[in-house]
Image (cartoon, rainbow, N blue to C red; front, side, top):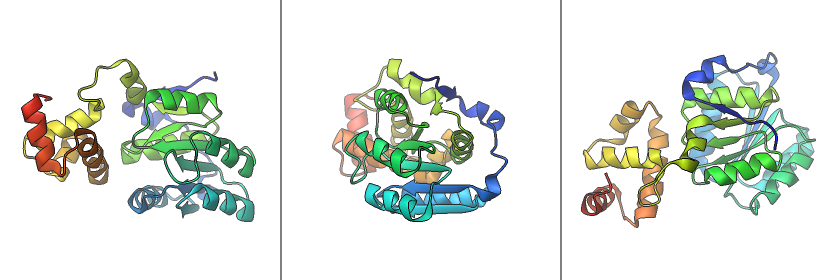
Length: 223
């Protein structure tokens, strides 16, 4: 397997910046409007020349076919048309073997490793902070392979109720009665990222809402 550049958040300032950033073309394929629009907003604020967003793999392939290869494509692992990592191969071919990375809010570190082994330019959790995400995208567009250090460490970490370490931190904030904004500030993340975590942990705990998730956590002594 090729070398993986696993970065800590604090390493992000040292990642290489593509000198052609003002001409960079990025394609984001994700079936969640909020995720697509938020990442696009991050990139446009950093001066990326063109950020195209689509909602499924077919549209991503069509976009590359019609407008030419992108400097980097971000594919949501669970969106329509992906069929696991088969969608990665299809997109790589459509993008002229230019970098294609996997984006996910639920995939495990093992899936991240499998994606890298299959030729992905990297694995980007949707929970990654804005600055780290922009740095990761620059890194991959420059030809490097990226996975976040903390995420990969979860492969050896103990989890509670099948929650990731970050989801457990968010759950603790819910149990303390904190708002999404307060939890985001405590964890140095975007509020939209906390919303995604809350949605995921509610599903894992079979909770109807954040209040019930906190009650379940207290009853089971999860935090």
